Length: 334
Image 1 (cartoon, rainbow, N blue to C red):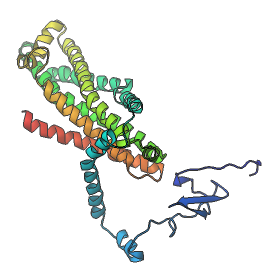
Image 2 (cartoon, rainbow, N blue to C red):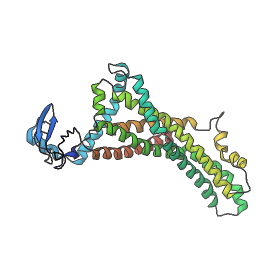
Image 3 (cartoon, rainbow, N blue to C red):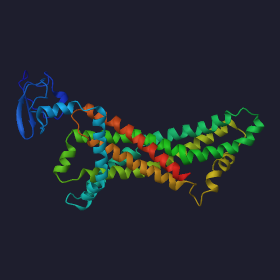
Image 4 (tube, rainbow, N blue to C red):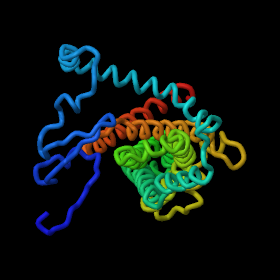
């Protein structure tokens, strides 16, 4: 006003409700406009959701124990997860049909998040560190004579490769991807939801569960096994480096013959033993991480604080999901 220019700001962000944000404010709720004084609280009767039980009902809701509210939220989440396949089918076969152009656009977008350069470097660095530590420090920790070390290292190398390929590297891949990509996707969906893009998609007849959720689950389900393979390749390189530092007189050929011995003997063709199990559990972990991240993103948002809160929740539940999947697979696989 001091500069002689009128500025109109339309926002969903409740953090704008400060005395210095505007001279005049109008709030839209339930198709009604109401004048509002900037900085005043927004919890009066006009802004409170309508209830059927009156004031006593609201008071009762406020005194519910925390575990009851948590159980209610968990029940809603489980019910949504049970119904989401029907939502995707509705988008594929129903009235809100998927647009191939926008579906491919979202596939590319979430493909960059899952299999981007940062993810590849992240997994390669983690795998190389695990492989180097497994070879260099495990062999170096043997308190025996150098002659006895030479006799024992083939068994240690074979065991370290078997454990890394079958359990350690896939688990590290699942946890790292769930933390990095899961949080990035939860932030992406959360900002879309907070900015109203999810609501706009539904208004325009574009099913978000088909365009967004399906593309997220596909890219994570495909990308996580690929990243696991890259992590194991980096782990093998790190193991070779640690081995040659411990035994400078040995060769890479000697390392390869001992390192892959337990995996190749039980395998067939070019596939190492346990490759199918690794693909299955990593694909299942990836799809579940995508589902959890999307669900956290589409939860109701009233501020950027809610977006950050749901990112943290997504990381926690996605990591827990990966641990449960690996525990179940371990009981079946071994």
